[in-house]
Length: 273
Length: 337
Image (cartoon, rainbow over all chains, first blue to last red; front, side, top):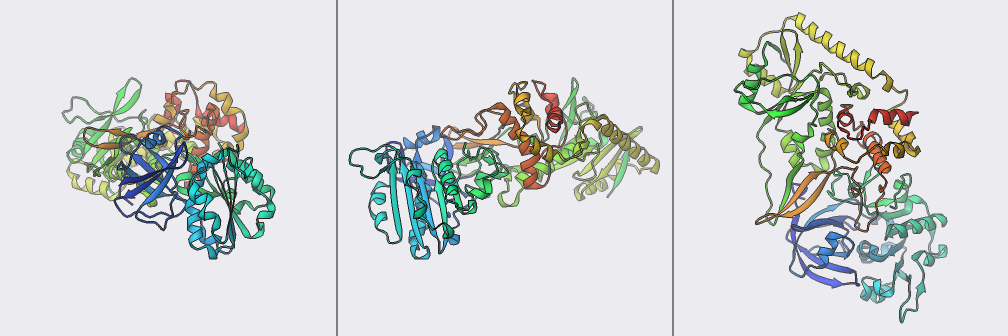
């Protein structure tokens, strides 16, 4: 970490992977040592243009480069989508809380992701898979608007499905040609019989509306609020709990989050907005 | 700690100005702001009876500053030691609040600390609290007992200067030739002045003394329609947050300079519509009343939960500055009712 908390370290985009029509993954090589824990986020600067928060989608075990998966959603993400290989960027962080993977040992990890929310989840997934025997099982339920909108398609439809101890089910809001899986929002593939609630943790990441309904469903299943981990999205700017933009009740999402249990934040209004 | 007497401010201020870049209060219409001290004597310095209308945070956390550069890392300029004369007790408490945020150990803001560590604080007793002053509701008394390097108390025939830090103490000892000793009678006069001001504050703000904490009032009032009703008078000028000495929201933005890229840090306001908007467009505080509620919750509930004190010093600057006539004191009273 730099002495000046606002100073990024320099990095370069070394590869760009088109994940869907609106989502790209950027492989970034930092010029200095950079390590993060899964679930933490970084502030990515496009020099002279702007800065935005993203949770890396790569495994923290990969230390020479990080991957950041970005949906074109606003001004900075739009400009990032225009970037080519070789573009210089700045990286500040890592910031905030991580998924407490060690606390998941011996448990079933029930991962529910939607849309670009699969990005932080992929980082967690790769971390879990590295030591898959430590967990009872990893059960994934992912949703996307259409089959084309799934990110990490190659591994998601391929090798991840074959990992022993991992079970993946997918759903799309609208089916396309050749889709023979479930059609419906991701909550339609959540089933209490899939999960041993007494010995499980749930991890949810996706658009706010999806996180809301998934959390409500998990509560219906009698999932304890302290075992539901949410990756919250707010307008994180400084990353160090000062600028105020990402306040959620008494918490700064950038510093106390972005990973919260539902128990921590359930008392505050408008957590999904 | 040393206590000394001087009959004239000028020799004292000249001595300060030899050592520091000195800022002094200057009256404009009914208000005080800060100017650079002019040692020529052409603009005699008047000790401000009340806090300035501008917030002290300007000295520690400027409206806009360079925060980082790219690709080459910049080293923040060394801040030359500077002194500010005429800060009031409420100002000192606002610095204590800013310290909680910017000097927090896990992420120290070096831009802030560079200024903070080089600031020589010369506070002074309040002589004429204004209509909007309600510092006593937050434990204020109108005079400071800590948090300053030197404190100046005006008495009939001159000024009592008291040290509050080793830096202040050394200053008084180094300049003993320009000061005199204080007869006990003058200290009694100072204490009587202080007691009178404190009594005036207590009397004028009696209507704001509640039987529960302000934190409790805001927490309990959260679901009331007071915020939406009050918002009808708000013209969204954001002056309340700009002049507030404890409001410290800022935003970072990037820009291209001639041969480098800069990241700037600039004051922001939680009363601004898109303040909390995320890239996808969601915004928990689209409604003005909700932004007002967020502001009060931050000040009196969330900041309290985090740091154990209110994020308000009762200086009343927001009351004086607000273009729509919003008054935080009225809002608190309505929430209580």
